[in-house]
Length: 147
Image (cartoon, rainbow, N blue to C red; front, top):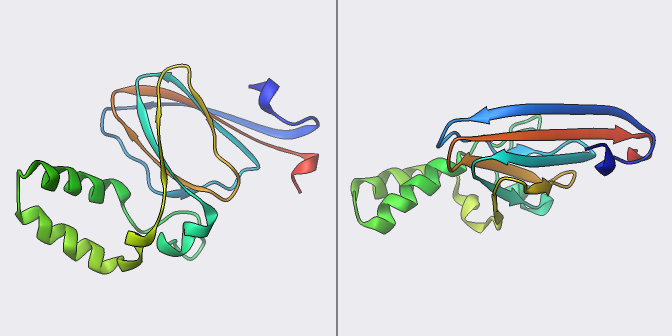
């Protein structure tokens, strides 16, 4: 990872994380100047929202995470698309009534396989779903040039 950090890096953080199948993460704002995710084992789905989409994500007061659960909505849509349970439609509608602006949000979906690395720019929002059991390394850093 040192290759991907800027010269004169003053802080570096690395985290190795294990996720069970279907583990999810809140929609989180990326507040590090350099932030990478390296997929070591398994498969993960990452959803990215550009900074201009923040107004549709219902951030908390500190603007670090979103009050909205993207994966709950996505799960309900999958069920509805399969035609398995029509009562889910009511739950989805009630949930979207709480977050009406979310329908306007645009995002990018990325699937990470072992050996893939993803750079998430500063200020972007992201969330993830473990499609299978998986292991990821996250790396973040700041350099003297970050400010």
